Length: 211
Image 1: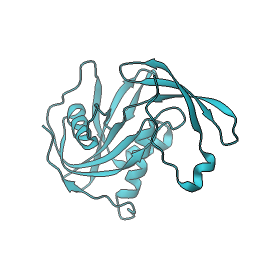
Image 2: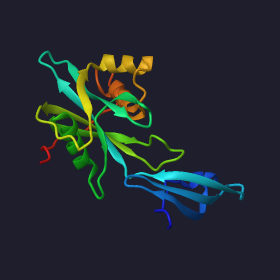
Image 3: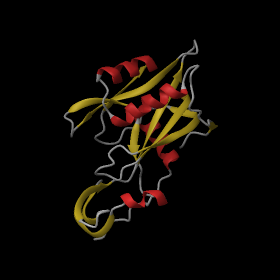
């Protein structure tokens, strides 16, 4: 089976760096991931093998919980991640269903995993967490105007929800307590969107909660 063509993101000045697919072999197909081994032609005309995983894409939500005094706390999760063999601290996140709009996915994951819905949303950007061996992308969304409600965890999903200040999150990143790539990227966005020195503006929109 031929792999789904990768999206070309090459500018004309980068074409001397491009690798050209010559052949593609499906290695394995699972319920979630899809692995391929491709033969490619390198810029110097030699050939090489590239193994990679096709991923459906995902979203991550940075939920901002405003306190009575105007300060902000962040809604975070702790979840056991089997490949790592340990419990990881993360922002709420989840993979896209086939054909699902990323914003709808962000609403769904926030509600299902934390119980919160949000009245305002802002798309921050895009993250490619493992560019050397996966097509995975993660859209980063901010959410505020949170309202608490019941969680709707998937069967077999177990996680704890808690809140932390931005300073506590950054301290966890600095000390190595938080090593999840998407959450580290979220911390970078937080540093540049909150506070008097914010330099990365967010375009907030009032968006109704998904049903």
